[in-house]
Image 1 (cartoon, rainbow, N blue to C red):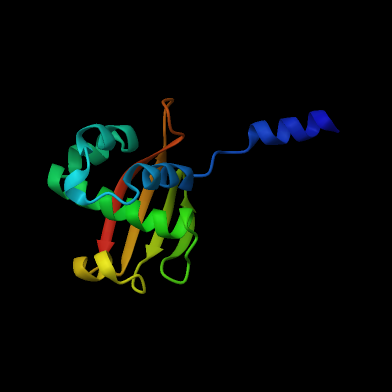
Image 2: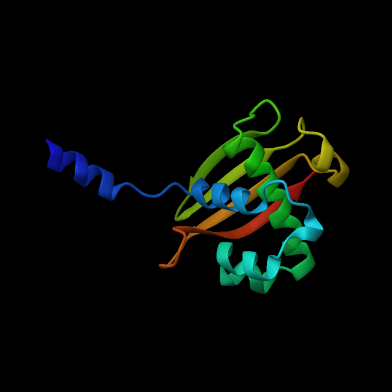
Amino acid sequence: MVTALLLAACTQEDPADKTLVDLAAQIGAQKLDDMDFATLIPAYTTDAYRANTQPEQANYQMFLAGKAADIALVSKDTAKVAVTQGKSGGARTVTFNVGSAGGLFEVADISTITVTLAKAQGGQRPWLIEAIALAR
């Protein structure tokens, strides 16, 4: 019985939102100008994300995604930021509905942040951010 439990635990996938929880811990209560995105972005994103996203845009997207993750996944304040997760093939999506959060998200004029994550090929995190979409 113990062997079966250990086997089940070893075969379960790491949840994709763990990457976003880790990102939230890095961003925490910091301000956009206080962040060191030069080291943060390569640690959390795929090569494709970095190649297809302008640096300032990536900084802004990562910052907003980290703030939303902090509210929804760390503080678990789903009244402010609701979360839905999905799967499509090998990718995972985490969508934050930030319309009720106000503050930073209201100023940014966005209501949803959708983060697409791809399975990492080794490395520190099991999932890496492949795309971030901000929508009104």
